[in-house]
Length: 478
Image (cartoon, rainbow, N blue to C red):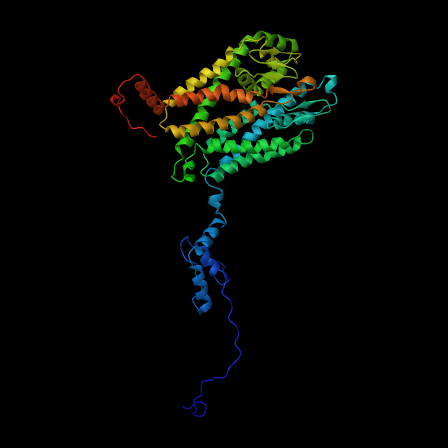
């Protein structure tokens, strides 16, 4: 059968205007024709599927397969993908949420209930006639805000001495609760902390009407970070060694942490014993002040609660007294081992524990002896070379300076109007503490090091004329 009259059509060779080809797609861009479904199933290390037709596709594949380009694109994609539900809410999340919220609720309700009960028993007095239970709730909420560093300032009155005992109480409560939740990942722990931080932030916002709370928000953030570290270090998924090149922390860094912990515990223990001695010596005066106030059972509970709230502050004052610099309770006052300049103080029971007369400078020897004993103890419990030990001591002294500055600032403030506008350790406490605690501790740690002991023995053999080669040899890690 003939087609077109038996004549075969020739190939058309006429020139027609051509359309320029479409440029190649950007690497990593997903088309709207099913590529998004294929790209969502990618595994890191595989190539992005693309259309196999045309030179544009070949060009795109060439660019995606270039070294260093496709790998980085896939890594960024994997990093910013939407997390799955089981990743956002792993095992233990809901329990951590409930226990974190419960920790805030118990602590806040305790303070508010104490304030409301105190108002109920004193509302009949003429001075309390214009107050309501809402005012009592604001007082309890203000106590909650002050436990995180909020300050009260009026025309002639400033109260900024933080009751760190309340902060430690809620910190222990929250830490124990979140450990009991056993969060399976950092996300679960963060959800538990968020359940505490959000209502606590709302309470600070409510207290903003009569308190200055910007420092409280900063303290709340630091508080959440400390609780996170305290809980995470006891869980199985916490492995700090992964961030180091060798998979383990450097030995000198581990030794620094041990030195700081040991010295902190020694300081805390010695300060607690010195404070206990002050309580025993001032028990009679404290009893007389207590009786003179004539408190009922509600007032007695409030006074005892106040003493416990400022117990960490008193420990800080005691530590400053032990190093010789002392502390002040009001302007133009000094309480130190060698000098006591007192004045009129408010009838607060725990102020009866302050020293009445100078006892001499012998208490300064207590931290020195404790530091020497601590250095001897640590020198027998580590195998770090001498050079790394010196590096650890330098970092430890830097931490002591920074941490001491923070602690001194934390236990200082104002306790009322007039001369009580400035209370807390004296400025010289920072350097006196490093000299009294850190220097004996570090010097003993270096002098008792095995490398120094061997070098001292060899030196003594040389100056006495003995044969140094007769000494027993041992392998030393320089």
